[in-house]
Image 1 (cartoon, rainbow, N blue to C red):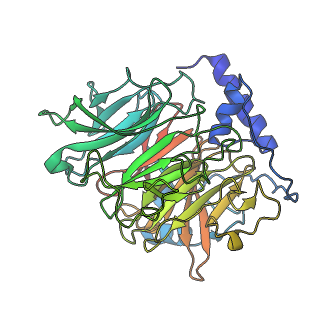
Image 2 (image 1 turned 180 degrees about the vertical axis):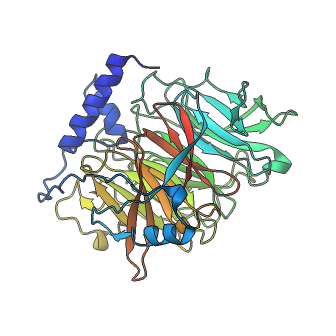
Image 3 (image 1 turned 90 degrees about the vertical axis):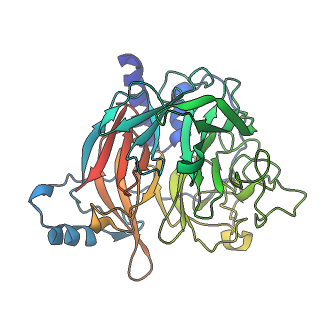
Length: 447
């Protein structure tokens, strides 16, 4: 719980940053925390980009409960507009309260064991179980004595995610990512105890430990892909502009998405088709590189495509799509580019340099830091079927992204939530949840 003065200062800084277009998830912390100078490369000058007119987000006026499914489908179908046009017809999405009382929640998922339980991580190092809307008093796992984080909403350290093994029902294994007491990002395997609601704290096995030169852009997430391998999203290590040039350095695990086989080796093996497995000048764990801060990656359970929300530096946020058939080894551009725009190199040519571009981006006149979400494949909201749902940390906007009939991408504003969104999550049925970092609450998305 932060003091009112500090909370007010944080929102003042956020508003000022939004007005000047100088904030992303990490930059929120940079602006509010800044107590020491950080080395930073000086970006090459780029052509001035016209600043879009700030968008006034409309408030939905339709009563969702009074709409038929046909009317709802019609509203949503006409709401997806070609990007980057900042036009947002109202969509009557609402938030259903599920649980609260969390200390800065960071992630939500399920164990895939047909129990119906939700698992929520908080930044201070605890994994909570929510069952039938009730938060169990005893944490599933308490790592607060191992986790470093400040009692501050701008801190990026702490426990960031959890992933359950695809065969969790048989082997009881799961994986967490957190920032350790020495500031190192770690990926650790645990096993459940004889009590299904309590993990065995003595079962810890560290898979990877990645040193962090700064306090932001840490190890963000672990998630199992449809191939059974564990994917790990790692920020560039922090500091403005990637001062150590980690994202483009194949000898560094920072600024990467990693891919490892946790079912083989001690503690893991490298999948034989990883792109750099035969390259002596690269770490074999790397699947893709050129990431600034990939805050949430998600696989479409139907198409197996991977979606990634990536935080930009000063002006832009972006969503990337990696098709299921992609061979790996793709370069997503940072710090040569900031999302879809040249950053460190004047007049960069992404096509000639083999850089991947986002499928959609937004300017900081619309928000400050992207929060990657998930592809909706549930049953309760058929109008959203197949759409990628994501949001913004500062404005609380929730968008849906979908490919249009002419193969362009269109997005719709689903909700102006006024929540400090830290993450989205899914239950076993594929329904979507939103985590409010500031209030410590969990909501289910619903029409």
